[in-house]
Amino acid sequence: MVHENRLPLAAALHDLSSFGRCALTVIIPTLSAMGVQTCPVPTALLSTHTGGFEGFVFEETTDFMLGALRHFRELNLKFDAVYSGFFGNVRQTDIVGLYFDRYSDAIKLADPVLGDDGKLYSTVTGELVEGMRRLCQKADIITPNVTEAAFLLGEEPSPDPGASRIDSWLERLSGGKRSVVITGVHSNGVSNEGFDAATGERFTVSSPLCVEKYPGTGDIFASVLLGGLLNGLSLREASRKAAEFTYYCIRSTAAEPEKRRNGVALEACLNKLME
Image 1: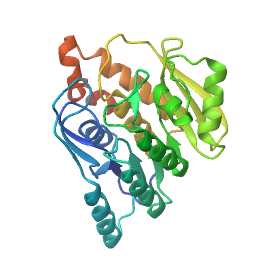
Image 2 (image 1 turned 120 degrees about the horizontal axis):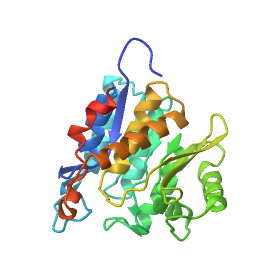
Image 3 (image 1 turned 90 degrees about the horizontal axis):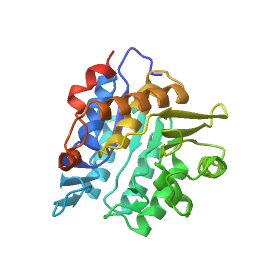
Image 4 (image 1 turned 45 degrees about the vertical axis):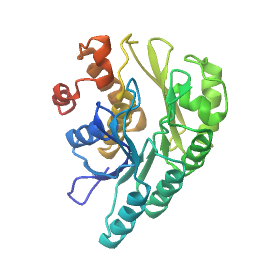
């Protein structure tokens, strides 16, 4: 919860796609709707996101990330959250680690964007997976989907690993010192399995399983979760709000299969988030 009669300020280190609702194009409006000022630090520039498109233009922005950090230090900016996602190369994981170190009092949320549906994304290498593991060690909260959780732990991905395996994953990913929410588990619809390191609480937040798949829904989930925490919600409450809003966005988007790669119709859904 942020005091001093000001809006929370979050640094968002994610990629920026010109077309396709994902990463910064959904993170900024989602956090804004929740009263959070977002300071975007692009990790890569893309003409489209990597899911469902070919021939996209891709430019990593590593030097910009370092220069921005130096400038933020000079300005003495005080971030209430540092929130990371997709990286253009493994060196960027270490740079985001510098952001985490610099803003040690901020909520440090790492959404380890590596893959989905049992596979790594086309731009993700084994070296990047290892770098993401190192970064997650510095985070206060991590929000891997079920595929990413498996890759972080060096295990075989499964859409429904089973209760005992999920419990083991949460314990190992947490290390007893960071909170974890594993999203997209195909159990009782779709479940988000959480562990709150601050309270020791283990929880499950479920919603109906949607057949339609849209890119960017993981970014929306993590953004609503972070916005909820910055507005004083517990991790369980923030996770429930994130699951409910993500489901609402999917069910409110009636897109033909070939158009789903553009993402959910977030613009028409944000009023729900502001209620």
